[in-house]
Amino acid sequence: MSEEFRVGDWLAEGVEGIKSKVQVPRVDLMPEAFGEHMRASRKEFLLAFRSLFDSAIEKMDQKGTTHKATKIKVES
Image (cartoon, rainbow, N blue to C red; front, side, top):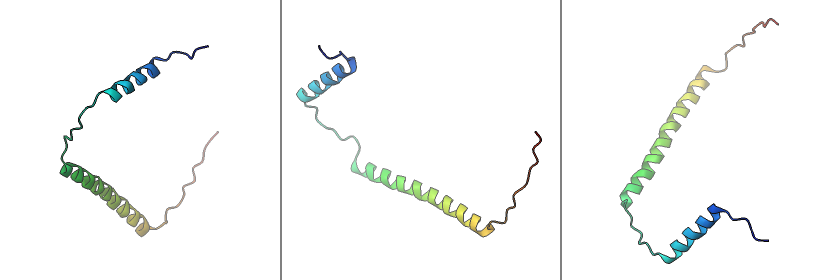
């Protein structure tokens, strides 16, 4: 018996066939400096959040754990 026909597989096979026959020149539209700035901005973004987390942790440590639990009576 033959294998079931699947449109997605058939299209994928066709695209691969076309890609193997057609040579498309690779054009870099973005200069290298753009990539460098993007990497630096990602790092700065993460460092900004680190400073927020560090500040929140420091404030929690300064306050200590002096909170008391409040007992709530629940009627059934």
